[in-house]
Amino acid sequence: LQGDVGWFKLYPATFPWLSFKYGFSQVQLVGLDEESSEFICRNTFDHPYPTTKLMWIPDTKGVYPDLLATSGDYLRVWRVGETETRLECLLNNNKNSDFCAPLTSFDWNEVDPYLLGTSSIDTTCTIWGLETGQVLGRVNLVSGHVKTQMFDLRHLEHSTIIYEDPQHHPLLRLCWNKQDPNYLATMAMDGMEVVILDVRVPCTPVARLNNHRACVNGIAWAPHSSCHICTAADDHQALIWDIQQMPRAIEDPILAYTAEGEINNVQWASTQPDWIAICYNNCLEILRV
Image 1 (tube, rainbow, N blue to C red):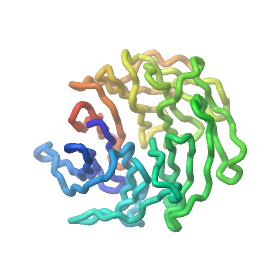
Image 2: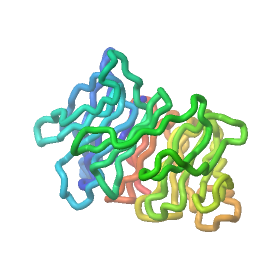
Image 3: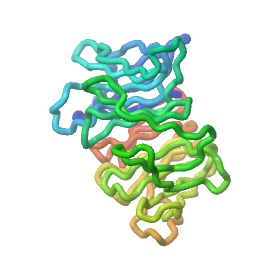
């Protein structure tokens, strides 16, 4: 399953699962039957380009429609119904060209769900307004960028450098602590280490998590705790860490799970925090913490 998985924010047993078939891709919405411990496919729809990320609208109170965003060639927002899923809008910031710069990832603003931010292989980060479908801001980064920078949406021309990899390796993922916004985690491409950063102390990691024995592919902060984080890697392991003793060194994880293949993604359920989803090979598994 070389794609992405994302938990539905409101109903803990519903989340999308990406599947590929013969040159095109599909997104499956599956639920978990707790009595039989079996997955149930609730909906399937075609996606014109392999997705790099899937994410439900951050709506724990059920105020908004059931919207699912996907990134690939463009950013698409889908309206999910009981029996069908239809495209709500397609956000394209290069309408004057027949070519697109595929998106590598995106994130949905949890404070204001009408804002989404995307990153692209053309080294731009774009802020979108969901209501208008218009670009609200854009940041152009230098090719080969190896830094973590923090921008203020009100003044995108200025930024603060939070971290730079000592070996100047590109940074693969970035994940913000859901309970304490002072902390974020990042990792370098092909790296076996996850770095914990404090935005109040730029350029100085407060912790390094380095028990993996192969490339780290995924990181997920606990939705209910500011001091727990899960990491997943090519060594088949998903590790949960307790970082509350920072800045003292974090030697070992508190929990570990070994899968039957290289884990390429991990997500922690926000409404049922004792569930973690992982992807490896062509499999999706739910782990109970």
